[in-house]
Image 1 (cartoon, rainbow, N blue to C red):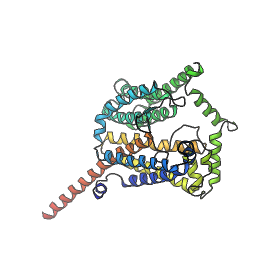
Image 2: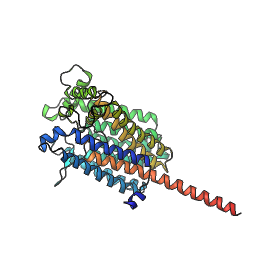
Image 3: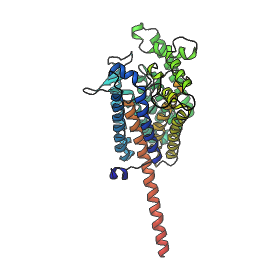
Image 4: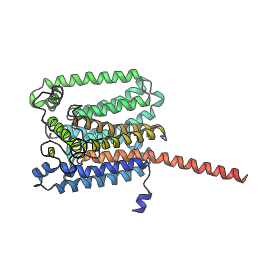
Length: 393
């Protein structure tokens, strides 16, 4: 244990924040999974507590191992990871759908399903960081700089779009942010956004004219947007239950384990876990959660400004923005500021591949941070040697 603690590198504040979010996750998942336990395990909520603890434990193992790897190694394997993710997305696209959406590949002999879009998100962001670094000299050129960058974005986002619109939209937005930071011509960026919007409308139009059994998730997306815009709709069950949880939470909350809406709110342990947090921990608890994510954002900005290289900077921007943006979206849905997206709250919602990939993302960010520390330490040692030599002279 002492050796492990000695080898912990990178931004210590991020380590502490992720640990706090993970501990909060154990409390919240244990409290909010009562209805799920009644349905699947005969009321054994300890089953989901243990399962969540295992996901957190494995998450920290992945985080620890990955943060020890030099971040430039991720650039070397990014093309391979991207190709694997595209293959997995194609396999998922043709697999049997669950709840009208083909998003998962089941892992044999394990009680988990692999959501391929999570792997694709990580792979594409890593690849984007690499290609934006390589293309820095041609970044303003349309043919040699812009086109090679956007092709993988449209391929991956297009494969995700049919089954998971919100993830495709988030990933597309992250890629645009990375290109903006990298200095891609603004004219090309706006053109890309315009093309994306037009392609989206065409996609919706084609699906809308297909037979109902072929439309996939379009009916779900349409209902979510309509329900969000029409506040008086009688189909806003999730939102109404979430509002009740928030309204009854008050300033200090009902205290841990005393939520009543966990028995009525669908996905209280994942998509709407923030509403349960407000109900049990009040405004103070919710504000603390928001503060923790903002601290992560602040530390990421610090890493970016001190980054050891372009690849490290772009990688940190992409992965860090992805985590914080997803967290803000989840919280926005819970308080009815945004339509339902199906995005989980990173590090807090009930575990799965999304939780593991969140830990992996932080591990990669800490790998960049570790190199900054190493560079600063070398500079200090060099300066101290120079001072000693001058003293001798």
